[in-house]
Image (cartoon, rainbow, N blue to C red; front, top):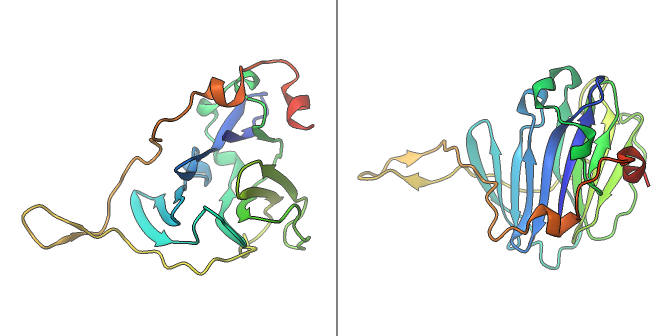
Length: 212
């Protein structure tokens, strides 16, 4: 399963904010627009081992395993600043595929991603005006809440008690530890082609298809 989250531009183009992939190895969320605030990369493996890749650093933690997952947990909360979206990264609407999420919102937005084995809806919150919810079909369920940000971002809905640890890698020939490391993580093992996953691209009635 692969999905993208796009935001529209006034000229009709769209810019990718996130790329999401669920494979037999785990869940991968890749932020595509760091300048706008959507630059966080997450990998959540079936065993529960997680890596967060942000600002050129990688940190590690252990969460509940994805296999047999139960409960609710927020895995990402971001403030996307609309005017910082790079228009040079825009593509045409024909790049949008069935199942992708297109956000047509003029102001700054908050994005929260939540894993759950049961939730289909989220309770209203006064600090999240004009909230909309998107559900990504996978196991466990991935809920993506989008809302207007007019002040602070606020707290996560379902905080997960996780201790993130920096990488402990030994340097060659010594005992010193490397505390900062940049690693490209969106390299999936045996990925299926996009055409096999989601079908061919079409450029017709893409807004109507995405809003069904």
